[in-house]
Length: 142
Image 1 (cartoon, rainbow, N blue to C red):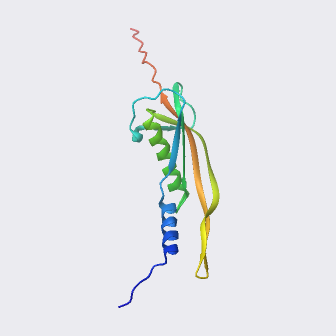
Image 2 (cartoon, rainbow, N blue to C red):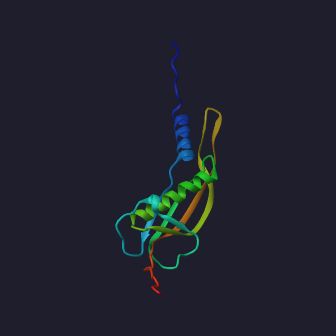
């Protein structure tokens, strides 16, 4: 019977690589206004241009590893921004900035092989806002 021995360093690097490729976006919120009751993240709207009337609740930031595709990473960032905004009671986010960062991933030398590389990270920042509805004005002209 043959016993399989796994090199702990290779296992750690493999797990770290997988977590970076499939990792979740991380984020934070800075409250600048009054917190409101939480909303549903699926109902949070995304704005590039400011709506007619809104109130800023805070600033939300998120970042995450690119992994297999930039689009899936961008989707995770937007979803994280929406989730953070919803926790503060916002019903929309107003995108402020997005970008990318490159950096070195953890590396090491073992058994004559070098393990390492670079990673890309996407970032996003938005205002958590409450879009204010205008009262419907109906003209009753007869």
